[in-house]
Length: 580
Image (cartoon, rainbow, N blue to C red; front, side, top):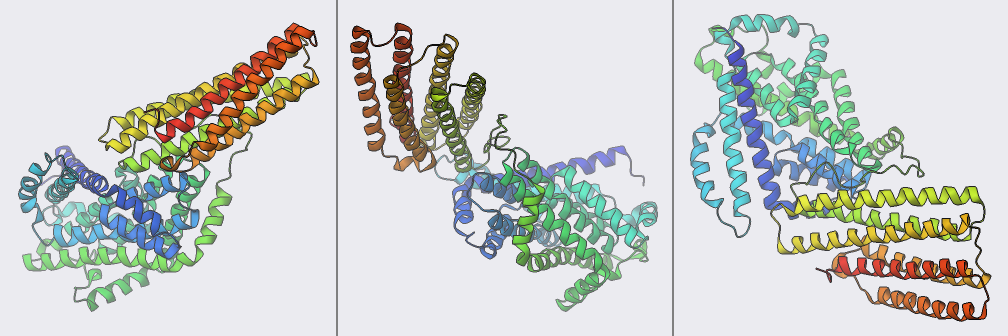
């Protein structure tokens, strides 16, 4: 029997079926238990050891280390986790992902779980139509579970037996008998395979099928597993590309942890395989190492073949678990060192680098609505900081007399105004995309509040930009304020800065706990000062104390400052939910 193009397509299709099932199952459990997962990460990461347990439990539950690592990178990005805390979670995720191998070994090769797939779907399907509670999400989880094992069944059928294709074994033997050279080759194959399929669980399943079918011997399969541990780090690295410097460092810790683990394992690889054999035999399983390249699979009877499949699949699962468990024990004490290395490898950008980029929102809406809203909240808080920076430059512009410095400040304010425009557009698009998903009434209200807030923040930026243009006109026309006018503007600007500080505190804190009393008080004081200075200005004009041009610019600035105060006050009302 020849293995042709159509057979290869069947293997790829079966793999796609398996990965899709895993995706549906993982997303279903995330939606059903999203808030709980967030709570677990928030409360069980007080130290690195609890972080390991947290990472293990979540990964074992969602059956995807990628989900856990990407979630961890997002939490570090949002400032909810420190680098050390994230290191523990990443380590725990590596142990948690080994559960998949055991599920596949026990259920996929020992029990005909695929025969139960359709009944499972039959039970889950009616649950899809229950709108109350999380029933439909649990239905997704069950359907994904059924599809996963149907895909595994198809994959086992699509990959041909060596027994009927002895020529394949001869081809593979050319790469499997080079000692450490073979190990390096198959580590590379495992790494590339995991990068391509974007799932260490899927690539581990492929390895289990290959070793069960006799395509590769046990030691080479173990080398592939080491490569898969390196390949799985690419997911967190990709997720961190759009994140801040802390997110990139968290992903780098994951990569360092796995690469260092594979490196020390290679130094003792033959001895560790013997240790795995000793443990497996101690647990009552046949030795996985006895099924090497010298076994004539074509002449094995059915009972021996079953024994061999059990031996190599259980042995490989044991290797996977023992390696990751021991790697955590060895490296957990060096978490601070890994964090320090990551900090040296990923340097922060220069603070003066004002190129626009979203700091917290990633590549798209996440499966967890709560996490998506948290990222948006952090981005809006960052928006508030942009407004504060604009005001700082506006303060300096008011007092500056050097023309070249004034030009630099004006350019800076213009750049910040462009950033504000882009923030409003991109955060707004993200929130609109999020609003198209299934939301609770509370989440829907929060999104509308956030949309109102970014609109008012952008208006505040527009007002400050117009104020900077007024000051630019004053400089170009060589118009000078009197000491009294300058003092009045400084006093008013100080009150606006006070309003911005209160607004920023509210943006950083819990929206549900926003108090407007202080904001209202400062807003009233800004209105009072505007009215007071305007009346004094009119009296001064009547007396002829200063020229008309200076007076017009002065009135323009105090009126704009009052408008600015209105928009800043409105942001407080927005996040509180008063405007919704």
